[in-house]
Each structure stands twice: as C-alpha cells, then as structure tokens.
Image (cartoon, rainbow, N blue to C red; front, side, top):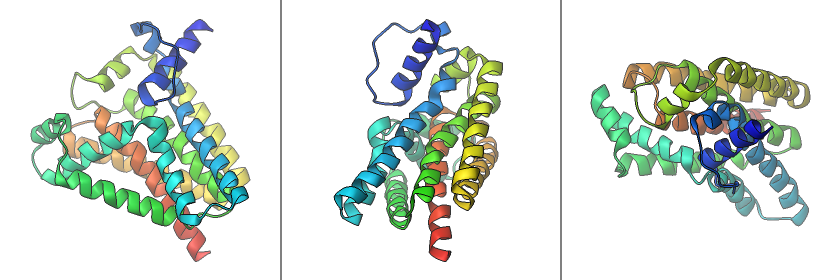
Length: 255
C-alpha cells in the first residue's frame, strides 16, 4: 500500500497542481506512477461534470459556464500539457529538420506560432464546448481527460523516444512496463465500455477521436521528430481532448 500511495503521489505531483504530501522520490517510486496518470484525468472529468450541473442549478450564464469549463483542465494541471502543445506547434511551424525541431522543443521561449495556435485552440474549445448539452454528452467529453492519459501513458512505454534524455526517457526507463501497460489497457477498456453503455454515440465518437489522434501522434512524431518527447506527449493529450469536444459538438449540432 505504501508503494501505491507513493506512486499516486508521484503521478499527481508531476502532472497536476493538486497538493500532495512531500517525500523524496526514488526510482522505485516512479515504477508504477504512470498507472495513476489517468486518475488526474478522472479528477478533471469529475470536476467538469460537477461544474456542468452546478452551473445549471445556479443559472450561470453560458459564456461564463463554458469559459470555466475550458479553464478547469489548465487550473488542475497548471498548463503542464499545454506547454508541450505550444512547444510542439512552434517546432512544427518552423518547417526545419528533425534536429532543429528538437532544439525548438527545448527552447524555453515561446514563438508567435505557439501563441497563434494557443488562441486557436482556446477559441475552438470554447466554441464547440458551448454546444455540448445533456449529461450523456458531458460525461462522454469529460471521459476524454481519462482516455487521453491512458493512451499517453502507453505511448511513453511503447513509442520510440526521440532522444535518450529528459523526463520522458526517465519515465519510460524506470516504469514497470508490462504491469503498467496491462493496467492502463484495463482501465481504458472499462471506461470505454461504460461510455458505450451510458453515452451511446457520444462515447463512440470520443473514443474514436482519441484513438485516431493517437495514430496521428505516432505517425507524426516518427516522421517529424524521430520519436516522442515529453512535449509531444503533452501535445497529444491536449489534441485528443480538443477533438473529443469537436466531434461531439458537431454531432449534437447535426443531430
């Protein structure tokens, strides 16, 4: 139980701003932390569902309601994944070779393209989130926070790395690959099954969006960077969540 508690503490300390008890990490403590990475998504998804019902109960205006819903993931994670999204967009927009793109990922400064894509991301998220109505649709979109992290965790273990250094390399090197992989797949299958049963087409669309983005993430990272990095993993999480909102939003508009 102590190892599990430490693994949870490592996961939440690394990938969220949720306060955790302080302790000195060892390699062993990181061995299974990716198993609990999706739980941060579960917290975000739970907050989104709770806010949807609370906003409806209080009669909060649509703009404020949607704005806070888009803000919640950034608040919980401290923008951890969005930072990777912005760095990746800067690198991709450079149209340079692989080595130069990897240098751009490490550059602490942000470029104009990162800002442009951040604003585009937020506008799309706000726009499509504004048409999400009904508990089944909200639950489906909220599940994307969990599913994206299950897939991201699997990518850290199984996708080729672009470099033999950095936090992502350390995570992959210290993880209990077999146990973590099985655990992530089981968690994902349980959530997907529950989604299909409860949310129907909404759940199918969210699952498809996450899986298709996962395939694109694999192909793009190999072609553009020679493998994945921590920034690219963050990019994937953000894009999987955005496309989940988009596809459900389109479905509800056309329904």
